[in-house]
Every structure is written in C-alpha cells, then in structure tokens.
Length: 90
Image (cartoon, rainbow, N blue to C red; front, side):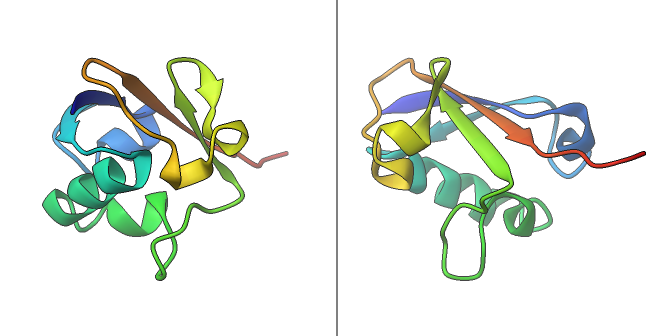
C-alpha cells in the first residue's frame, strides 16, 4: 500500500522534506521502510526494538494509531500518516 508520511519541520531536516512516500501493509512496515531510507530519522520515530516511543504520536488519517493497533494498524492505499513528537520547553 502506498502511503504519505507527513513530518514536522523539526524532523524534516533528517529526511528529504516534510512529505515522504512509503509502502507497507501496516504502519510499522511503512515506518520501517522510512527508517531504512533515512537512518538519521530512524531513532526519532521508533526505539531500538522497532516500537513507537510514547512521546511520538502517529496519526493515521487524523486518528491516533494507539487506538487502532499501534504499529500493527493496517494501511490502505492513499492513507496519510502524520508524525507529532512531543515538544518540551519553558
């Protein structure tokens, strides 16, 4: 399945831009493909075991993937993934 991955500006510097294309039957497969293509981005998207960080939220078509199976959430052709990392400051 071909999907579009939207990155925030803070992460887009580690890839070729804010919008990337990926293939995969699940969110985890698509993220794994992106991580392979952009090694500097990989540790910002998932931990060493390939699991999502609790402080990085992934949205699949505006729905939080945590409520749809996490990285096991199935993808359909044309789906959109959006990455939203937690930002701290003061």
